[in-house]
Amino acid sequence: MLITVSGPPGSGKSTNAVQLADALGLGHVSGGDIFREMAAERDMTPVEFNEFAEEDPQIDRDLDRRLREIAVERDDVVLESRLAGWLAADHADFRFWFDAPLGVRAERIAERESKPVDRARTETKRREVSERKRYLEYYNIDIEDLSIYDAAYNTARWGPERFLDVLVATVEAYDADDDEGKAPVEGVVYDF
Image (cartoon, rainbow, N blue to C red; front, side):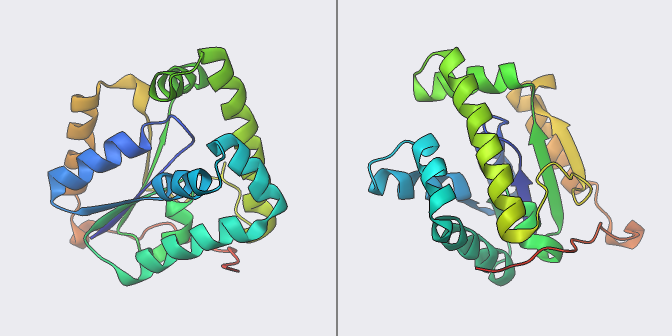
């Protein structure tokens, strides 16, 4: 089984993807972890690295190629990144989208990165604008188009334990005999 978890910064992708993978006995691969490692290697913050990536498209392409290869070649994994659902395309058994109000996401990021909430909010907005621009330009992906996802959740509506219950119940309730077809992923240019 290949499950993708996508969403904006601070939406709970990493936390919930790790817990879902553990609950289902699957591996976990995080695009955010890979991206932060790439930023640290260049002694940059993720926001600085995002802006740098606007000038050097190979950064995104290297990361995204790696995530796409994982989606195509591996099973029994929860693949988590902003573009995971798009990159995995029809290889994914489930494509989840997580989100939360910007204020909630900024508070989560501020706590995680030990920074003021206002700064986290400003950086998050800049990052989202930067990423949306690049995804459209590189791959013809409109990150705001949620039509490819099997389920979209506002993660601020449940506590972490209850939300994990919701995710596990969703996956366990799946019956291939009742499946009338997942939304196709069309129009993407996988130009890595």
